[in-house]
Length: 85
Image 1 (spheres, rainbow, N blue to C red):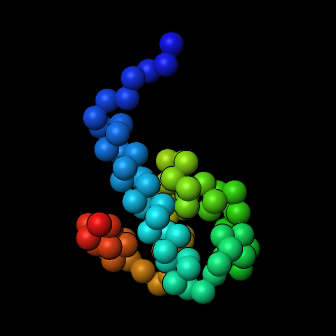
Image 2 (cartoon, helix red, strand yellow; image 1 turned 90 degrees about the vertical axis):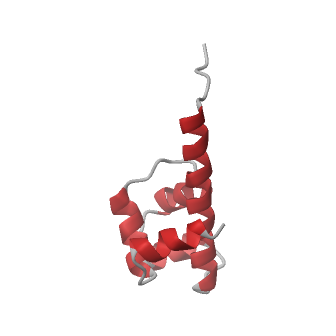
Image 3 (cartoon, helix red, strand yellow; image 1 turned 180 degrees about the vertical axis):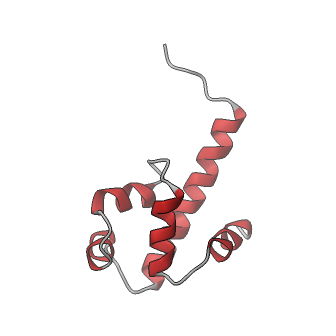
């Protein structure tokens, strides 16, 4: 039997999707049209990064930190951008 999603789960999914969209925006702003090229050029596992951009994985803070280092961005800067959406 499938578990019914509660409000917390729904809110988390929304935030995760906002984060995924933000990561994609940052990649494109950096001049990468392909997530694969971005991941390859920056030593990030392609499948892991793809899942992060799609919001299909509950990625770790360590994974996010690694991507933000590539963009020379702090957690505060990243999440500040989300608050505006």
